[in-house]
Length: 415
Image 1 (cartoon, rainbow, N blue to C red):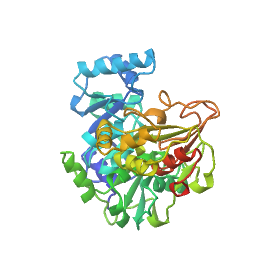
Image 2: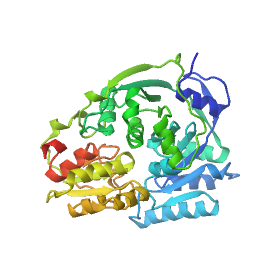
Image 3: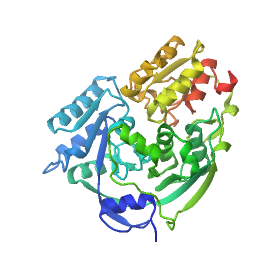
Image 4: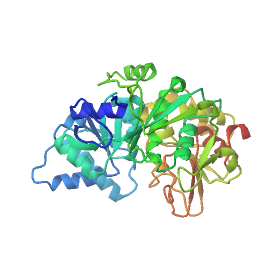
């Protein structure tokens, strides 16, 4: 029996010829990423071990991105603990450089790898054909100390993409549509695999956006075949693949979905669940207090270009706070070189340093009681971006920017 991409990566990591869904295997982890959301907890547990030891420090990447710069003495203490431990143990460390998943894609992820990240959106790495999955502190610590972990082999859902997205429709609209279709539990502990002729029309930025949000359908990981687009991106970053896998013709999938990209329209996820999706036009007129363009899902250069093209020559609505937050310093610098930052600032947007910002909802741009945010962030759960009685809508870079201009939820063609 043939294997899926997910099964092949697990087989490689386990050192076996074949695996099947439901099997449990001991695996070698290729990379371990952790950010300032929980690393201080991992350090505390590590220091309580009888014989603390890091199996392979070269596998570790630690990134401060959630609260940058610090918002309180408590945060400063956790950052210092992380910073000092990384320095003492020669751990690859980033601070103030951008959001963890963007940094990983720019500098570390390689096709064929098995990567554990102490963050649920680690599944973003599937855009480069890597099995990325989020883990908690205990699993992270075990892998950090032993270099190994265990995995239950997941079933795979296959999404066959055909056609091409229409003008004004984006990868963000596609993945929100899929999550709405299968539900927030529709891919629980399954791999979501994307294939088909439609893949050729999607950029690396599109692919990262799609894989990044798959955890919002409950997915264990998300994966895409490594094609010329992925290889060109990898070569520009100066890296080589560990292995490039594609599913066998006789591989078994739990379910297959056929999706015509030309059928997708602008989408908004309404409060308080990511799968509570409707056509964006159905939310037209909902007043907003804040708009956010950024995050590991939609803070890349292509997203900033989309927003800048819409807002150029226009102004942010007087009562709206429009936060624009590049996903990394590299993206920030590119945006400056292209004049995008000037466009946003001239329009009245607040351009922030590269970090998680209001997507994380603990420091920058926190919204108050009764306030409404439209966001390119990853989640819209109750209290995600501030007060428990606030409201978060999710949309594409185009929808968020158009809404910031109009002062209410709108698509670009409504301006």
